[in-house]
Image 1 (cartoon, helix red, strand yellow):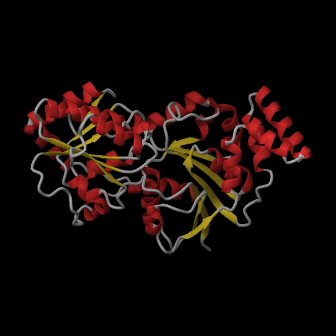
Image 2 (cartoon, rainbow, N blue to C red):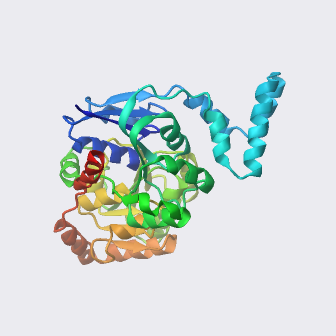
Image 3 (cartoon, one colour):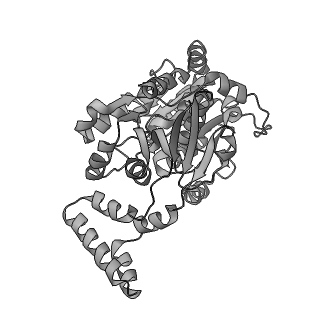
Length: 397
């Protein structure tokens, strides 16, 4: 009999976590597993890429719960009172003030989720794939019936805020905590030491063969331009550092370098970054390409790949650029050190405009250094599909 597995995520927008899930599904033996992906919000460009043998479902409580989380508690209390819902007002007010006084957000979440029904299906294993995400982890912990429960952490918890008291309580309901890098695991244990015995590194799934094949797709990519092309992939957000990239490009062009910088991805900071691009008069040189279901041809046709992240757990885009043998400059987020050997298969610099400028300039001025990185990468087997064995072996237990 097939084992029933539940993966729970937020959406299928184009991002590293979502691509990691697709890579994992592509190597899971479908003859052995009955897989369901449960969404908080079933939308996103990558929905169409989910294999047809995988069940796709959506919760029916997300909007109500999310509204209660983002609305200031005093406003919720006022709304109850204005609607003369005095019992609800008393119950909510008591829980809110108690959780605040005790610094115990778990009490608040318990109140918010009390009307959320339990998942009707029994699973062999349930995975909060997009950890740490409060709603997903809470739902898997208390609303899903599964023999084994896993939270899979994809972010650097030293930079991604998590409520320590809440997660100490939540993680008691999980049998295993997977983390995408060794350094990210260290940061988690530093924050919640009692998790040390439950945690294990399980890297994002990356298939060099698949990426190389997809990179051969024909795309239109500024064909007439003959200068240096830099590509960056990532959600348009402060943690991904595209604002640093814009300022770095401005300095390169002022110093006479014929460079264009192409950003693949979308996000909440698109408008803000367009304003910065306008400010530096780079509308024709710093180009926001938007989300791409297949970013690999753009990476393959670039001269240099740059990852300017302020923080990142593993950064699957960096691994993908390595698969395509691109000269890489990355900032010093924790996931970079587990993928880059400085000067051998890329460069790691401090998270600053000045450091990025100097290293990109160095690579442009020294083509032999680019060739060295390319040669070293071409001799390296970059494939983490075997990581799925850790999950399969754990499921077998």
